[in-house]
Each structure stands twice: as C-alpha cells, then as structure tokens.
Length: 227
Length: 227
Image 1: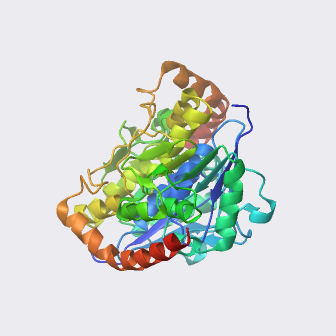
Image 2: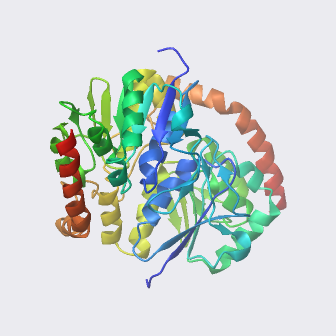
Image 3: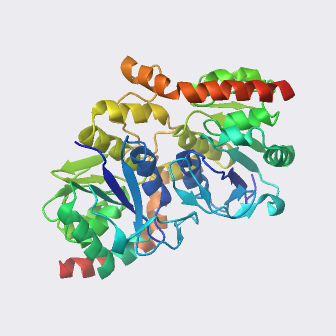
C-alpha cells in the first residue's frame, strides 16, 4: 500500500469516546497516515460521558477516505435515522478501501445498508440486532468480511485498529505501534465478556440496559423496515 | 467508601490522549463518581496526535480531588519544570486519597517530589528515569505503594483504572465496568512489551526514540538536582 493513508473516524454527539480514541491512538501513529475526525460541522462534540472533543473535518469538505470508521455509543440511535449521516457514509463507502465500525457503530453501518449479507460483530449487548439489519452475526473480537471490518464493544477498537494496520501497512508497523502504546493488556478480572463475567455482574448489566434495549428494538425495527 | 468520588485527570498540551481517555472511560462509569478534566485554563488542549479536547475545570476552581491522575506523553517535559503545575499537584496530593499516574505522567509526579522512596512504574522507554527522581523502579502493569498508584505505558491506564475502582469501590463495580467496555483484550500480536516484541521492532523503536531520550536525560538531571 502506498502512503499516505487517509483514515476517517466519525465524531458524533453521545458517542462512547473510547470506541473512537482507542483506534485514533493506533491509527494516528501510522507513518505517513492522516486521521480525520469527521462530523457535520466543526463545532465541539460531547461524548456520552461528557468528554468534549473537536472535529477537524466536516462532511462537506471531507476528502475521499481510505478507511471510514464509525464508533458506537448511545448516540448511534439518532444516527441510524439521520439521512445526512447515512448518505455521507454511503458516499464514502463507495470509494473507501475499508468500511469499518467499533462497538454499536455497526448498527449505523447496518442502517446505511452497508452490512447486507456481511459477516459482522458489535457490542455484546446489541449483538442480536445485527441480523435485522441484514448482517450475518458473528461472535469475535473483530470480524473481517471482504472490505468490511467490524469490532466488538468499546476496547475491541484497539485490537481492531492494530489488525487493520497489519493488513493495510504491515505486521511490523502494527507491532511497532503496539509496543509504543505498551499494549500488553493485563485486566485485573476476567469480566470483559458475557461468557466470562460473574453471573451476578452480567445479570445486573442486563437489568440496567433493559430500558435502552426496548427503545433500540423499536428503532431497529423501524430502520429495518426501510432497508 | 462513601460516594461521590471526585476523580481528576490532568489534561495538558501534547499529552498522549489514550493515557487519559482509557482511565476516563473507566472512571466516568463509576456510579456516583465525577471526573474532572483539569488544566490551567478551560481553553482547548491538543494531544500529541492532534486530538483536541476541552478541560472542564481549571486549577483555581478545582475542588479537592479524591484521586489525582497525571497521564503521560511528550508534553510531560514542559510540565516537569512548570512551577504552577507542580504546585497544583502537590496541593491536591496533600488531601487526595490516591495520587496516580499513567505512562510518563509518573515523571511529573516525580518532579513534584511525590515519588520519593515510592515504588513506581512508567512507560518502558522512560523506566530508567524513575530512580533519578527518587522513586524505587518496579516493572509491573501498575504498581501500588500505599496511596500512590502508577501505571505503565498508555494502554496500562485501562488496567490501572479498573484496579483503582476495585480498590475504592468494589471488585463488582470494576467487573461491571469491564463488562460494559467489553474489555476482553485480544491483541493481534504479542508485541506490547520490550520482552515480547520482535527484536527488530524493539530496536527500531529505540532508534526512533533516541533523540527524545537524550533531551529527557538532560531534563531529568536538571529536575533531580532541584529535588
């Protein structure tokens, strides 16, 4: 692959910032690469946890990207019915080498019609919404199906981005970045997935998420009907 | 521990944003907790990779924090000789329950005189600077010595923050957050530490970092002489 590579990460209200900042840290270290933080305007955008960040590129002036990536978070609900966002993603997807997501960003790709018949993953708590959006659900840390790469929940974006760099640049380039960011993870617990979390912790998480799931079910049904 | 907990993360020019955004994602999910992004002013701050973020609290109006945390990045060099920053850290440290850092943020704690005789760690490429700043260097993903907790490079901030939540709130609270952020890491390579990275990748990283190391050696010597 010839440099420079143009990566674009969608920065939108109420995104989960680590979905974006994990891949951002990895991709911004690609030699000769550039990372665009893209939104409708360049006004400040607040994440679901309050962190406020500045987009550096707006839809109107965004160049064709080599990689478009949609992070997740509560804000995806609004994006899934936002014609301007979906049109931007489709337009970029036409010319991009890779169309990607982290976490529930996959639901936005799905709403844009970009996951039809495509093997994909997303955050565990939204995984069962993928099929209604035309995707072929797969449980993995990240899933590549042709030029579509989808990552699992939040922190999966770091693994996804390193895998993408290995594919687009070289394994050595990805390893160099992994070393720079000292990515030798050592979680204090084995609670990071539904399969390994203590049953009481999982049950409590599901109970807390029940309200959002009900809303999202209705949303996915509406969006799916239009696809 | 009674809620609410006040966490404060230092947000400074040329920080490595993932040093901060990793812990931010974890700590902002602590029930009843608040996270302050603290800097001299509330003007936008740009990370070393260009991501621009907004502080929400300035030094003058910052309440006493339960946890003060200093992330790392190239910008620590300026902080290590910045009397205003060092005074703020010392003032907060007097009343905080935990004094913490991620990555080369440990060098700033050291410059503030907060690591004297304290077991500590930092990014692998700066680890040998700890001793000159009075710390007792230790190689670990994170190190707790009394109320001082220091994390290793960049991504170690996620592990550090989960461990801190387990200590300050409960293991179940940390596990719930780990599940929310689907932190079941699966790096594509085992290149995240000097011990496991391919020798050629490590050698190249050291060669690229040689210039910064030379500057930092002189800086650490100047700072150490004042301690």
